[in-house]
Length: 357
Image (cartoon, rainbow, N blue to C red; front, side, top):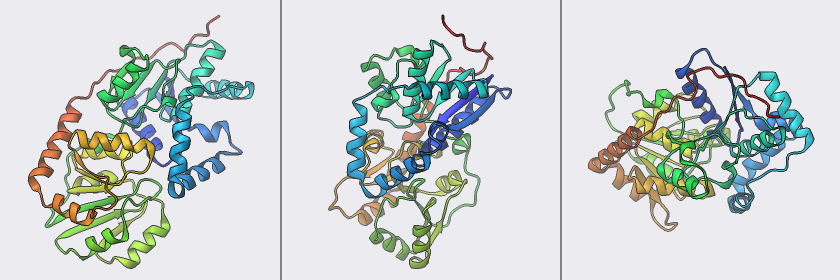
């Protein structure tokens, strides 16, 4: 069976989700051919770099405008499908002889759903929602299955008319290695991991890093992602903080940590859940992350600092020293993963999709 996964480089979360989905599919059946495709690069090759640069600028410098645009997009759950786009999707499916289309980015759902209606084809469309909040763009009439992170997301879909049999509460997809036990060296002191997401967006201030740098009985690691400027600054200013750039070993850093200070991205949240490492979220500021932050609070798997006037340094120190609360948070993470639903939908080969007359 040939399966294509459509995603986009809006941050690294959607790419990481696509990679995790590919891994899960091949776990079911190693004979499948699974390819990950950047939908923006494929559909808009002349403009995709500009689109991504614009997104990065909005997120890092104009979060208020980004949130406003994100809300506005939620009011329109359809996309106009021009003939040129339809022919491109024709080519995409034929080039890869696709039997199933999987999406890990919302706009892809809209385009493929509109394509199915226009071309009258019944190629299966599976959508993995990568945040707890189900933005309107994720929901498309041509979707055959939705994979969601939590019962709350499922209930949102149900309230919007999606049939229950189309929804699987599977957790937001993360790679298998995040679930594996940590086999590294035993720690002689507490460990804090600071992450800023794939764009290297640091969720804290110089004040916090200065405080962490001064504490001898806590080891701090900071992952700056692809933000070379941030990486250089931290290495230059804070000699006791271990600063690294982009890495494929995030699972190891998570599992050796006692606490993760990060932004409330869907993928990062569920990587932490799989790793059983409590979270500390400093003032969420992106629209799609508010729901993830509330999820963290409601399930008591971390702490979220909303108050702009509060001292995050003092709050973090209280949490990292509270072994009982950290143990409770870890236990709650185990309860979450134990509740995931597994439904094999890729195991058997299927006939290529039929064109409907």
